[in-house]
Structure formats: structure tokens, C-alpha cells
Length: 390
Image (cartoon, rainbow, N blue to C red; front, side, top):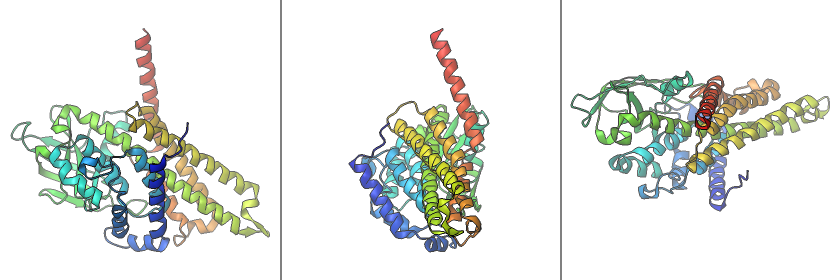
């Protein structure tokens, strides 16, 4: 397939690479990681100024009207920089489903703010992803009740674990199970009455708090899909396909940058009077990492392109997600090991790529869970084909 970017996509790539390369350094990342929020707000403002945060926000809501392919270009650049930012959380977990399923009131309140950098979003998908990985249908732990009937306010109670950047988000999309077996997805204000955040740090030093809800009231305008509980599982599937693909784009960027830095290190570090890059063992391991990285890239673009064009993308997303998690961790392990003792030095940049690669590997389902999910999809497709032929 031809994955060459068109003129507009190339402009996005150049703009994103320019901003990240010009503003992100190991010292700057270390400085931001020492702050309470661990968010580079100056970099966030620069991305907003370049109109990159609103790239996939519909034009009617103040954005550029582009799709997941263009978002993935930005996420790949983000992965190369490993900058502390809620980019995936806001642009993929939050704004995409709000744009697709949100009410006019919710869209007007949130999406223009996403585009101008004033609003950050996220979603609580850890539990539903774990349930799907185990062969379930995506049942959430949070419960929803309607004291005044299904057309009124919904009250949420329960805990959503490890919500990316919930501590800086203006709204969190929270799936909740109804008493009749349905699911609603509510845009919850983290500062609302009954909401409590429990701080939790991740492997790559981001903050992903646990969200505790105690009879939190959400209005009908803040429910995705007009609050139709029968649509909830489909909306969750829609969200997860894009969330997994976004993680793939991040992992491609992480792997690519780690490999590039490793190649530079091997070309300049000498042993026995020769650069390390001239030894067969190092060459073969670096070559394997390069093959893994390009394979991750191809499967990621296939999934993103199919999602953007409204095609059946379930298996494409499954392949891309499994490969990004499984091959991604191989790449960051290899690049760290090829640095020898320097790879274990936390004052040396390569260790951050290892931490990011490991974090992405485990988010929303480990490689084994993704492979099992992909296997179930293949079996289901084969059975459906047999039924049609019969």
C-alpha cells in the first residue's frame, strides 16, 4: 500500500516535528516531571497556537475537520519526544467521541476549548478494556441510576481506575452500567460534588488518577449518544478502536526515536578500537528493531486509514495493537540493552523511551490480551462466513 502523505498531511508532520524538536529536551522533560501536574503547559500552548490541537475537531466546532490519520501524525511526533502532555487523552479519548456522539450543548462547551488549548479531556476506559480483553462485552464498574426516570439526570457511583490525566481534565468520559444491562457514557466534571481523585503515577511518570464517584449527578446534555443505554457498548467499541490506534501511533514514535538515538550511540561508541555499530551482534539486533518498527508503522497506518474511511477496521486495529505492544517492547528493550550500562542511567535520555514503551505495552490490554481478542475476532469472522455460505 502507498502510505505517502498528501500535501496537507506533510504540512502537519513538519509542523508537529518542528514544535516538538524545538521545545522538548531531556532537561525540559525532567523539569516538567518535577512539577505537581507533570504537564508541559508551555508546549501545550504552542501546539494550540499552531492549530494542531483542533486538527480533528469538526470545522463547525472551531477545528480543522481532519481525521485519525492526521491525529496519528501528531501522536507519532509526540512519541518521538516523550514530552509530558495529555495529547492522546484529550484528542483521542476525549474530543473524538464528543464530536461524534455528543449533544450540541456538550460539543459547543468543550470542542472550541480543545482547539484553542483551553480545555483538556480524557476518558475512563481501563475497566471496559480489561473486560473485553477477558472475552466480555465491556462492562464498566461504575453504576448509573435514574432517580427521576430515564429522561432526567443520571446519578453515577463507583470507581474508574487509572484515568489518564484526570487531574488536569475539564471533563472525563465515564462509561457506567445501567440496571437494565445497558451502558451510558457521561461527561463528568472532576470538580463536581461527589467526585474524588486519588493520585496515581504510572511507569512513564504520568499521573493517571483513580476517579471515585459517589452519587455524582450528570445532566442529559452531558451523555453521549443522547443517553441511549442500548448504544453504549457500540460507543465504547468505537472509542476503544481509536484509543488503541492512537497508542500504536505513540509507540511507533517511541520506537523510532529510541532506535535513532541507539544508532547514533553505536556509531560513536568504540570498543577494541572499533565503533560498536561494526560488530555483527549489535548490527543484527538493531536491524531486528528496525524491522519491528517499520512493521508497527505499516499496521498502524492501515488501522487509522480504515477507521477514517468508515471501513470494517476491527481486525486491522487488533493486528496493529498487538504488534505495537509486542514488538514495541522488543524495540525499547533492545535499544536500552544496546546502550550497555548507559541504558540503566536515569540521567541518560534512552531510559525514558524504555519506560514509555513499557507503559504503552500494558495500557488498555497487554499483548497477550490483544492477541486473544484478535483470535476471537478471526473465529467470529470465520463462523459468520460459514453461516453466509450455508
